[in-house]
Image 1 (cartoon, helix red, strand yellow):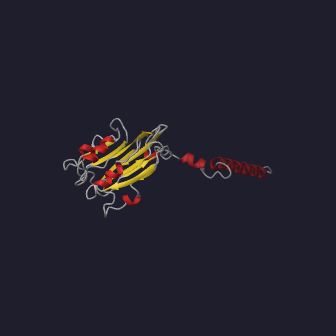
Image 2 (spheres, rainbow, N blue to C red):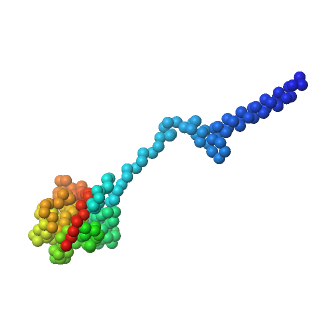
Image 3 (cartoon, rainbow, N blue to C red):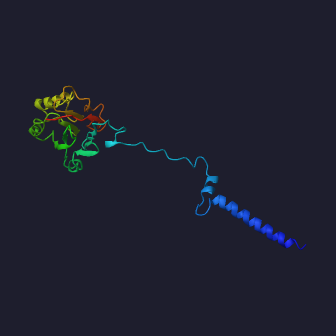
Length: 236
């Protein structure tokens, strides 16, 4: 009967030791928090990881452009509410914020055009030309004296064509446009061309204004075009 006391003490020590060992395993050791417990009670449904987001490249392109190419995205205006955008190499070229933000005074209505050095990719100038109530001669003075190799980015907003004359259409045609000859009141148009091109540009989209197919009341859908343009090796 004298052994009962020591046996009880040993049993208590063993019980405490086992309790400590189990707790240490479940809690992950000192400072481990509750990761082991969480793992024990976590179900496969609760442990599903979120799918990684698709990577976007310059101007939001899904793939990077090859070396010596310029990444671009051109978006036409939506009706007369949302202004157009021209992005090149992750830089917003045109229209500037002051031309994009106001619908009250139709700032940027017509053709929004950015001229870019085809060798360096640097912006030369960006302007908007009102093709409903503006003077077409302002546009002609802008695109007549272009240097060889200059890239021309165009995005329509509201009405791109009412003030267009034959000389304007020929100048854009010489820059590589195949649709400018058919451009009319409130059409949607995006285009990238260059001074001195030999063939028609592959970078052009055009949607006619038609009450049967218009997305908005009185206007067709907005257009969005993206791609990679090879840099010019020389420019005059």
